Amino acid sequence: GGPALLSRFRGALVGAVLGDCVGGEFEGAEEVPLERVLQHLSALEREERGEGILQYSDDTAMTRCVVQSLLTRGVFDQQDLARRFAEEYRSAPGRGYGSGVVQVLQKLASPRLSDVFQPARAQFGGRGSFGNGGAMRSAPFALAFSDPAQVKKYSRLGAMLTHYCSLGYNGAVLQALAVHLALQGALEVPQAFINSLISEMEDIEAEDQAFSDARALNEPEFPFCTRLRRVKEFMERSSVSIEEVTSELGNGIAALHSVPTAIFCVLHCLEPQPGLPDCYGGFERTVAYCLALGGDTDTIACMAGAIAGAHYGIEAVPPAWQRWCEGAEEAEVWAEHLHQLYLRS
Ligand code: 8NA
Ligand code: MG
Ligand code: MG
Image: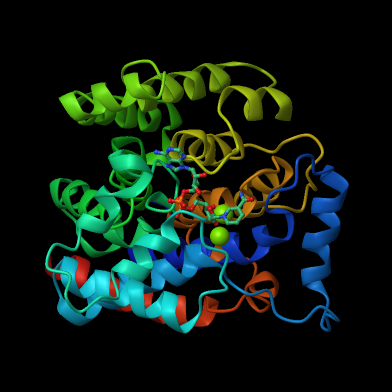
């Protein structure tokens, strides 16, 4: 049942781009009244928009690099991907990159660089970045590889090119796994979906590097599992406030404070929610809810958009919204090519 696999692929990639473009409006805002979110979204329904096209940010710019590298090389190629990140940053540095990652992107441009992971390893006094910049671009790994072992392996390596801290790259693995499961229709049974993610992360976080990174950052052991269990508690409650979500799951630029949050947004919006228009389907609810959280809205909506798009399929993504998003049309074409690669993998 549910949408066809190709529709899910298109939904995932278009959903990611749309979340980034539409979410950019509120990036960094501390509080976003739901009314403002709904105004912003209803303006997309108009034939004419004085504000014009919504441009994509670093989230989509880097996602496009991952897609193009996978499609061109047909395999994961870290040298090729590193070169594309560097070239993308050189040609469009104003896409809203995190303040730390730009150093990595500049170093990756050096033709003398032999170890492409070295610049990421040197970040933040050798601890590596825990930002969500690896996770925001990890959906394509779920679209290129059907084998979950490969999804995990390559989403991790792909993130490590800029995010060498386990709290950065494990967030990318979690995001890719959520898209991987959603493509398979796993969100039809929400409890089983969250349980699968928890059990995957129990394995992934059981390594010395993850233990020492968590300790250094004053986080509990198994930090992603801990947050996912909180997601599960929220799912079991009859109502959860925006304040509880932002204070307990987070809405920040750390992967730990945004990937479990994006997953929660998708789960929470499977059902109609008070305050959101009745005419909204699940995809629209998810995007609106992400924006209402404030904080890193473009990235949370990008990640939730990818998961929701994989679940509901492209038919659930409003064409009126897509029309105003830079890069949405191309994303649809690339999703079809990734689908071919996935079927061959
Ligand atoms: P990043 O790797 O530069 O990390 C983002 C930030 O997190 C850094 O600038 C640091 O402040 C902090 N950080 C990360 N790791 C460490 C560490 N080990 N020790 C201390 N501080 C650390 O960038 P990224 O690629 O992860 O990007 C993350 C987000 O920044 C994305 O959402 C992206 O869109 C961008 N961004 C966010 C905002 C916003 O207001 N939310 C604004 C502009 C850009
Ligand atoms: Mg961004
Ligand atoms: Mg962001």
